[in-house]
Length: 286
Image (cartoon, rainbow, N blue to C red):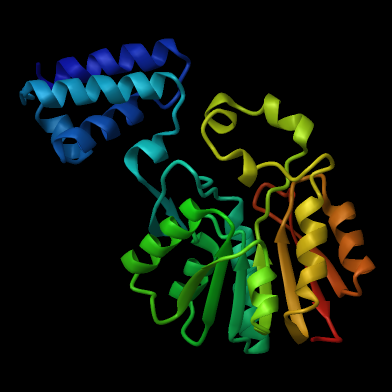
């Protein structure tokens, strides 16, 4: 079969399943199979595939029609201009998190901070993007998931950041507290979706992305409480805590920071004008 025939087949299958990006997805998947870009596919509709390539394309289309996220299938995702390796077991990076990274960079620049901790790092995008965009920083990323640590290590390698970033398996900040590590900034995009809401999420999210990276407990605030409490034991005086939040969590997360003694608490909106980041400063320090 030829490129044109296979793409037509893929378009029809994915379109019938209501996948709006059916054309782009098919192009990317076929390009992955034959290791060619979209321009090649456009200009070479008569290019013939062998049987193993055809079978592989059919397999990928079958997975995609069942709503497996295209990023997992391709094994990569772009975030703030950088290409990251992703796989099942870590959340797929989302543009919303750019606001958190930009806020962290602003705080680091303004205060000449050096030591940064990225908690619940997932694929490592927050800490690694900060490290890639800034010169004089030292990043420690942590996650309790073996897969997350594996993926972050791979991204450290791909981005040549081994001298600036270290990933450590830890239940939140436990390992850093035990080691008496100190940080100027603690930044986190923790699980924050309420337990009862998980079942209402889109199929590609609830069926494929890791539950433990989505669910923040009954009220969605479990990890905010734990990380805020623990951060008091690792933040230097004048240090900053930054969280990504859900659009309706501004008041609750702000109150958690107030409860633990943080001051200068602010909420920053994303490009869609939704509440997206909460930041606070600790004047006491550890």
